[in-house]
Length: 282
Image (cartoon, rainbow, N blue to C red; front, top):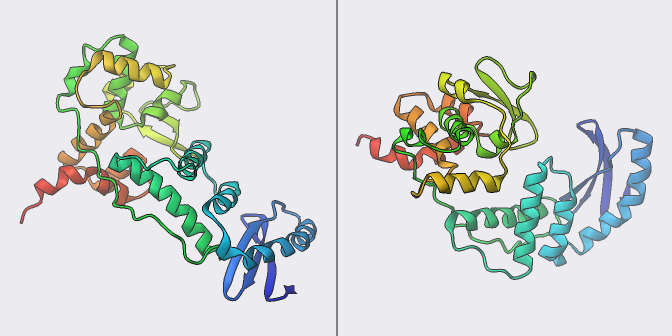
């Protein structure tokens, strides 16, 4: 089909029909949110003129307009990810200065630039004013004396920390974990991963002895950690301690990446970067 310089086609992606509009070598894709071909064709005819208008004013889209479209699309994000991205964009649109902490700033910048990149790829914007990202630095603090958690109180919180230290599970994954016959095995538990799926966490004997049903809110976890530990180490650094300990024992990087639940090997390399540079022979 054609209108002025625009053309469109309807195709299926993951069993859902989409409309793709092209104009002057630019492409714009939208989900038609139906598995029925006839319904998809009907919706495409109605949507086509509106998408053509987007092409005509694509260079005029502001970040506010573009982010509204971007956040409204189905990117297969988890609810937490969408909430964070919405928060980062809203702060930036309100004129709030970017955070001074390098890692926090980097997260904000990546989100904003991801929005611009998405708009560019779909022909909604041509010259995005992206922010230069200096990149956050990996945290380099670990628990140097793991035995320090032995006197932690209350006992449930001590067991909570032992499992973090012995398995490398994320704090949120363990807080959300509930004991039942479906997600616990002899040497493993099934937890809700950082994305939408589930992942298997392998347990050591000590972690298996400490595992039990937890019901700690984020506030309570932070409260008991500060009560028990006054140093610079944070609760999430128990997970990093687990990874560094494995690396120093000679465990392959790919195995560490899988045990940590990282999406890529490069993430594991970045994670361990402060602890590997000093050990390279030159």
